[in-house]
Image (cartoon, rainbow, N blue to C red; front, side, top):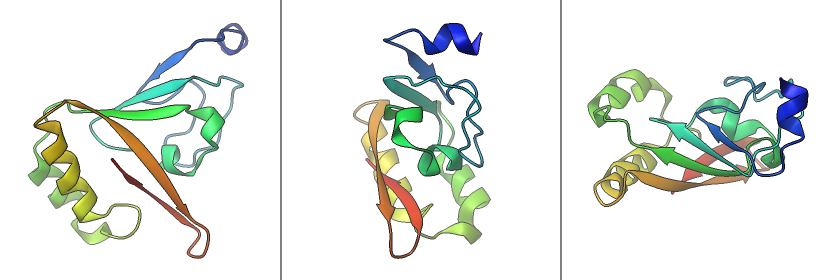
Length: 116
């Protein structure tokens, strides 16, 4: 299946591209979508993989309250999960349930984070 999908020139991925590890960002396939629509929250693997593995990145609101993320990620607010990014995202979702995500790679700290 991966071989078949890797030959498609215009491919969109939903949530995580096939063959991409959501935690490590390691790609086990040669699938290179032009865009990925992730659901609910930006997965760590999408931040650290090569851009060719995900294409343009979008995030879709699936109705999870912001309070849920605050409870889960409250001890992890750092460059990867910036609280102000989450608040900005939820404000933007009020206008449009799909937002384009910008991934910022900080070479000095060797970390990546996202904004909209």
